Length: 102
Image (cartoon, rainbow, N blue to C red):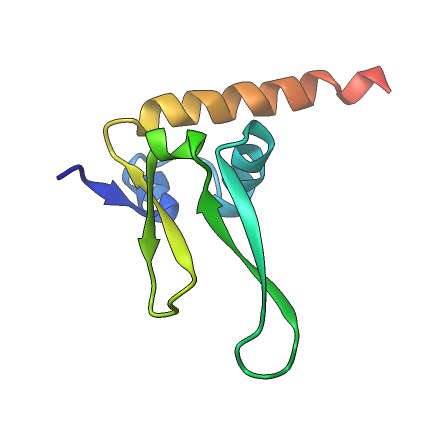
């Protein structure tokens, strides 16, 4: 079985100067991660969301089940993490390159 960890754990393991929330934004823009919206289960009708790997994203990890029957949490494969981070850095670089073009 392939070892898969939370983004925060991988960032800490590799001592990267990143935060999971920022990486998630880049992964959403690339199409690796998506936000799934749902209504709160507490009866408040508040709209909430969770992140899930897209079909393309499942090359880099799995959607691990949680205690909520409909929610999952992304876990990323250790062996494909360097490739995934390269995609994130490329996306951030492309976003930065557009800064002076507006």
